[in-house]
Amino acid sequence: MGKKEHVVYREVQRPRQIWIWILVIGIAIMMWYGFIQQIILDTPFGDKPAPNGVMIVLWLLFGVIFPVLFLGIMKLIIEVREGGLYIRFIPFHFQYKKYLFKDIQHCESIIYSPLKRFGGWGIRFNIKGEIVYNMSGNQGIELNLRNKTVVIGTRRPDELIKAITSTQQKKNKSSSP
Image (cartoon, rainbow, N blue to C red):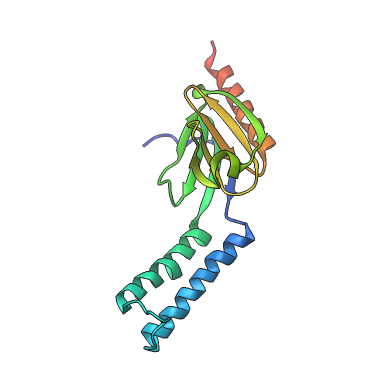
């Protein structure tokens, strides 16, 4: 088993836009209402009710699983460790995505439009081949790697840049003769 690296910087982001919470909870409430009305009270839900099996599946997906995943489990974890920058977007990543210091050519703090540049929030790619990991907002850091550009949304871009550069410099000093 490998040695656990020391975490220099850690940021955990969760969904915080009120309109997303309202949308997810509204859909869940509608699914619960339909489930109770049709399955428990045996009264058809709507003008053209779905079969009970379909209603149960919809209730499980949109009334239980989706809200729990989205509002309870979903988070973006950003860590700077001795070896590099680590990103994990739960529940989509089962392990951390590593961006090693040796591959980072340049990083800088940016203000960007997630909608214009990437088409929204989450894990996104654009036509230039850039990738973004973001939960909300328009602040982030841009990493220029050897073969691609990665944007990471953060609420504390200056702290993240400082952690990356100081850890990268420490690593360079310790590895030079």
